[in-house]
Amino acid sequence: MIESVSDTARWVAVYRAMESARPDALFRDPYAGRLAGERGVQVANLMDRRRQAAWAMIVRTHVFDRVILEGVASGVDLVLNLAAGLDARPWRLPLPPALRWVDVDLPGILDYKTGALRAEPPRCRYEAVRLDLRDASARQALFQRVSGEAQRVLIISEGLLVYLELADVAALARDLHAPPNFHSWLFDLGSPRLLSFMKTRWGRVLKRGNAAFRFAPAEGTAFFVPFGWREVQFHSQLEEAERLERGVWGLGLLRQVLRLLGPEETRRFVGFVLLER
Image 1: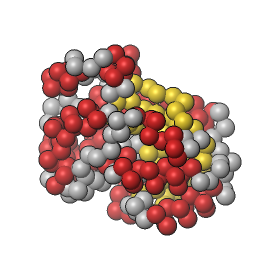
Image 2: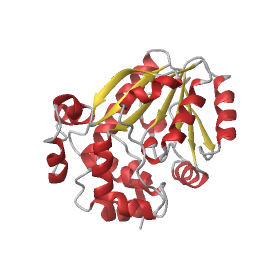
Image 3: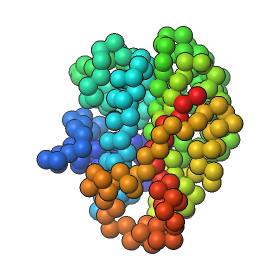
Image 4: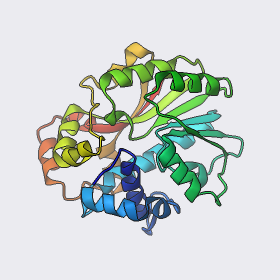
């Protein structure tokens, strides 16, 4: 049984470990198996016994890696990772030692991760912040503090927004826009049709663990424009999967959904978005 949204981090870590074991791996995460642990395997078996959804998380990890490294190369000096989960990028990516990386998540999952990686030196200046992002005053204080310690900040919220209510995403977008050096924001975004598909496939199990899927705005990235953000990159997950040869394996229901869509709606069915202020 899924006990909380943090269990989904263990689920995704199983997929990262799977990819890392391939001879043609798109990325290498030597910590993923350790972080997933037995609990991760249990959750993955509950959610996706045949690992048919692995391609989606593998492609997402690879594209996020690429966009993050491009951002760092272009002058980002601090990465603010919201709902960091079991992301081990500060340990596994070729990051400059001077880069600051701030992981933010609930105490339980961050304590577990930092404990598991205690003996592993991060490649950059790493900080773990134990905070419930639903606490508006606490997150605003964190954002202001981080803002005073950097020149150009990249925010990551990988796998987070889909679990939030529309009003909560709007409030987060406003708060992230307030510090003037919060320059760019990277996240994954699905369409209402994807949300419907995911609810059909996994919704009942996740809802019991208080991890229901919620956010998929019909207007796509235009949702964020009133809060001061504009789209500068959109990477279609389906196009990236085809290019990277990590296809949609065995998901007959998803293929049926996609056949109903036009070319642009198919492209925007699910993707990875980089916004700038």
